[in-house]
Image (tube, rainbow over all chains, first blue to last red; front, side, top):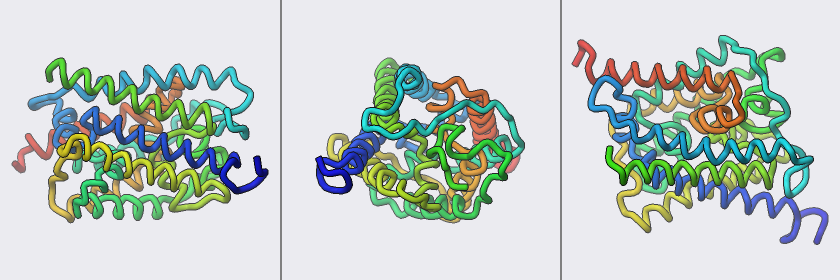
Length: 166
Length: 140
């Protein structure tokens, strides 16, 4: 095994794992029906012709990943070495968290698209999907970096990794 | 809703959970889609490669899904200006909140994070409110 780069390197293996995880993720989204904005909007239409089936996507996903997080808690390091990005749980409910979630919810309710299904939909070649994804990346670029005392937008919250984007 | 769509939702969710487990237990990273995308926009040193590969896998999985079932990805409705506004809101909001449906809704809740529970409750409630206004509001 070569220490850096090359076919057997940990870096390459991590990239292959990420590729597989991404593919598995979007296959799951597709099987579950999350890639149909009309179905997502019907799930969100609680006061109309409500389609509650998508709630079971979260049940299935949380059921499996909760086991994985418990398992990870007992490991010293991930299988390919390095450190786990989630180091500790924060409980601080900040205005940034709540306002951000509300803004995200408004966009989700307008379109029926959240980030995963939006990126997956690029495979269908719809211009509408491309417009959404480019706008979403623009929205990410314009988000101010979290203040020093804000629980890291990356690590602690389960998105990204320890050094997040600060 | 019928038993078939319920089983597909559960099975699809389990696949998503499996993807989360792979990335966590082997790479030590969390499968929060908005966080992964943000890491490409604000590239952190040494963490660009796997994120790019994850996104390639995400789109690739979409192609595979469409090869298996041609209607796997539905029509994206709404005008382009509305979708552009919605996209900006989703991008900005998820970065302020530090997570989206996957990062907070799946991974965060799986860890029992209070912040993720609050965030998920908030974005679900606001999304349902917006759908209500659009579909059943006075303007319609």
